[in-house]
Amino acid sequence: MKHPIIDIQHLSIEIDGESVLRDVNLTIFGHDFLGIIGPNGGGKTTLVKAILGLIKPINGSICYYNNEGTSVSSIRIGYLPQYNNLDKQFPISVADVILSGLKPQGHLIKRYTQEQRRQAHVIAKQMGMEGMESRHIGSLSGGELQRVLLGRALISNPDVVILDEPNTYLDRKFETKLYDLLEEINQERAIILVSHDIGTVLQNVKSIACLNKILDYHPDTEISAEWLEKNFGCPIELLGHGDLPHRVLRNHRQPLIMN
Image (tube, rainbow, N blue to C red):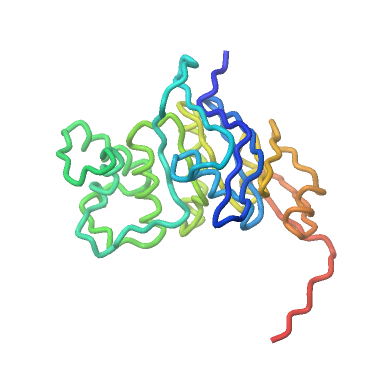
């Protein structure tokens, strides 16, 4: 029997007096791999922040449950934000950034055990960063830093991993490995993947939430062309064969832009 780990009911959020989410209902189960898609400004990141407890709704509720289906005040969530505010000049190594995923909020200093450092090494290897654990983060490329931050999201053995545009800065070679890795991770925990890359999302997730202030949930990955055209403002058709997804724009009139 599947148990929910996150249950969202009638969630509405306003920011600066403007409605961002309206009456959102969504249940996430223990081994879900949910893709959240939608246009810019549709509320994807706002919904993620609400799940993380960073934004308070004006209406509705978000409830959390453990593996037995018992209501709890919180669960472990690993989070990879779309943009990071990590200061690359700060004197910290790759290993310490990964290990910082174990720090309780508000604790600046923490001693790590040998077992935790061993786990950081395992995570670094998974991320393709083996042998680079002692490197200063200022020496990393954008893609390398993104891998390290993904490792930070995973090291706490979370109940659910939330990835907000994880492809940002990643090179194509590691992007392929990323989705293989996420498939492995999904054997142990739920994943919520937020992305504008519709074709790639549909190739990898199990279910889809289409979000543009209101949410349409699809228990599979079938999305109508009408929804895509209405919410993205552009007629998109999706094709997929092999490992190569395509997005095709049908003939349509583009607005004239005057300088």
